[in-house]
Length: 228
Image (cartoon, rainbow, N blue to C red; front, side):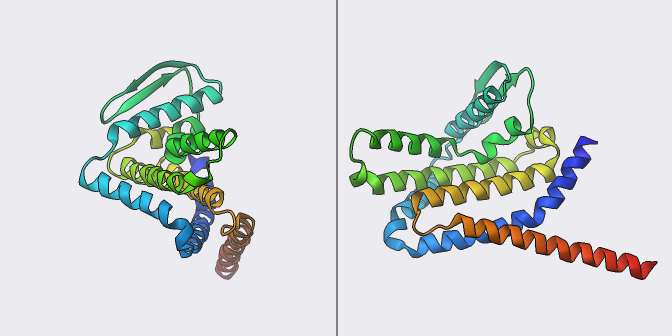
């Protein structure tokens, strides 16, 4: 029953996910238009891609971040951690219980991006970090690419038991896609606050979702009336 409810939620949110993707692409294009500000971020993305596909796939660092995110999410939800294992290609976290947030957290929480941003903000409290902003943008771009490429690889190159545990593949993929788009938009907002306008994007997504479901409902009602 719960799995069916989650499937219904996923289908309900599918138009929202599509519209969020469109808005995030629009935001990304606006950022890329500011070449002088975005070049370091873009270089970080490109350098990661070159290393990942040419030399080293960063599997162990990803497994470490993945399992640590499971563990931290579990602790935040009041779960008790029994064991944590991190290997070259896989790992696990044993806990007394879990929920959807704990299961899916590693797929949309960019752990290394958060750590780098946290270090940068803490350092800014004590010293002027402005001269290092371009380096910071490069590192953020590097780890943003790391997160999205590794997440895509994990989801589609192997049969992930996490997706079934969270409520099914359709529910999990929709929620992961939606959460990652929101995270990417937030990262871009933090890096380029004068270019990214999240409030307007949110309004566009909300109104678009309402309009799509209005059209769908009207179509169903029209068919039902005609059939009767």
